[in-house]
Length: 318
Length: 265
Image (cartoon, rainbow over all chains, first blue to last red; front, top):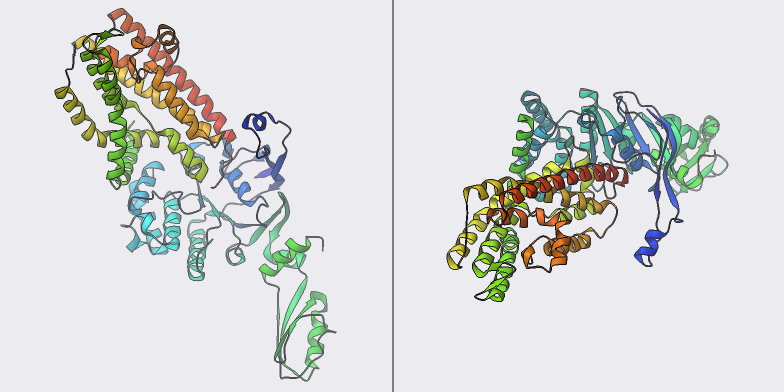
């Protein structure tokens, strides 16, 4: 539960003598999170969307207790995160970057063992969880290797395993697929989805890859300039921000007059793409059928990437 | 208690796994730390010549710096360097997410390093003992008083230096701050010279700081340079500094958590 959550950072001017900077109390503040509020149910997978600097990661850090709020109320599983109650810390995991849980110079299995002790995981539970994570993330051949010898994708899989070895009920994922290739992104997504299904783990995710959000999340929180501008389903987000359909048209050749149907996004002698208002789509389809050069077409919702791109360039005013 | 022992064992095992991969770096580091008292010894031994200086003869200086080498080995830390890097690179956030105070990991790492490098430091001390004219007067009472004093001094030093290293959350120049601290603590803590060899005003000033209680006082106790009543009074002052440093640690830690901006992670 989050209510009126705000986080500001004091800015000091750069340059000049250090004592002058230290004495300067007139420097401004930047508000990274500005009075947001939401409620998340156990087991939900929620995506945080927003451009760089919108306040997504700051929000996750406030929810995990890494940052103290400037104002507002946060309760996570009944705890105030900033109190850093040990039971609270045992109930969460935060994956951010790839050198948080793993000790760089020791074998992965030893990092897992260290986390077993730190989180006081009983032996039997540790063995079961480790086995499950090793299978799901295909870590078998990596367990004896040190983190420093692993590739980016391998390290991220190990990092996730080390973060989940204590079976947290809440998982924060900050850009978990950043820098990974397509196949590794898919593996991570599949794992998160499967882990959520098996364990009922609540997942809060930020990502710049819309594929992560579209595949994993039923609900999105859109944060912009520190404020929460949308909280709801992804389909409703598409309908609200981008109430249009994309029609992909196959042409037999020759020029076809498509401009009267909607906005022509692209057109060649063989294919075209048109954007039309959702309400005008049935009429546009009926008129397409009457055009001789058209031999096939497909009506699609806009991609989440298009939706978010449009939102961040045009705002949510529509 | 069992959980704490398991935790320390796990941390020490992890730290051993890391440190054994860098034997050359470890040798260089330990040589630097262990040889520093030897340099001071050479200077003061020469300065004393055949006579006395600040109540120390050449043999006393040899005994003093031999013990400084050993006691300093028990208590020295590199927290400023570690904290500076971990706050700048975001590693501090990872530690905060764990249900264990980060201090425990640092202490375990420190102890592991000391245990490994003792293999080099102890033979160096023996060699020094054999090659220099060392004047010891190791009495049972002196050693009995020195043992808890060495331990208290080490805990005081670790606690104070860890607390001060938290300055990394306020400034990006904590390593420079650590260097200034190192200079002051060397001067007032009996490293650069035994306190009695300092000018009276400096000696008096030093006694009002925590620095002499970390290394110099335990060493002087072991050398039997304090009468019993003075030794007990010194132990009480040392304990007082320890309590004050732990209170300071708790207070600064709470403020540091509020101050933390979780940069880089």
